[in-house]
Length: 289
Image: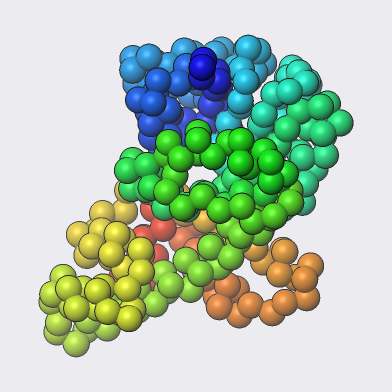
């Protein structure tokens, strides 16, 4: 049976790795991103290049998007040059951007009005998960569409869970980001304590990272903090965006989350200091400098 033709819009740190997995699985993939140079390595591997979103949409069975901000998502989907203005009935759109549940619902409603199909499918696992094809994928939309998409999502994801109707994937991602935010503070404070008390941080991690305190941040990002490696697996600027969405949703739900507020304040401070293009592990600078 012939495989679906895929278009992938947004080939950043994580999107490019996902496209590589799709190419390795013999899918025909067309890519579009605002900065063409970012997509050139993928074109060399066999991806086709589209000059515009409209060109990427034409001829695709499935359109994945993984872009920066909710405003970018709105433009890519809802503008006159966007997906819905150039799409057609039966196409599937899968937004993997971490965005607002409200926007995910709006996209799903618009898709349905055009007889298209929509999933919100944000991911967790960072650059390492994307490279290894082990991402956690949180899906919202119609369950029959989720079932239909499982073979493709399994190409680059390991834990793929249906969360509920449109927007539920984004709500689940907010839960993920809330957990990560609090945990990142704990990891940084543990490292700061280890350094001040005279422990060797790497030796400390051998014990702590394999015990009850174990977490992805502790295993994957604490070693980068120790080496002062702040290159992004996930950008500070995008994390601040996520925390803002989570706090807005918490306020709408009349839910008080002081830990989330603290994390947002600390990351916003880093953003204002010029660390927006660094990885979230740069939070350690709030403790050791």
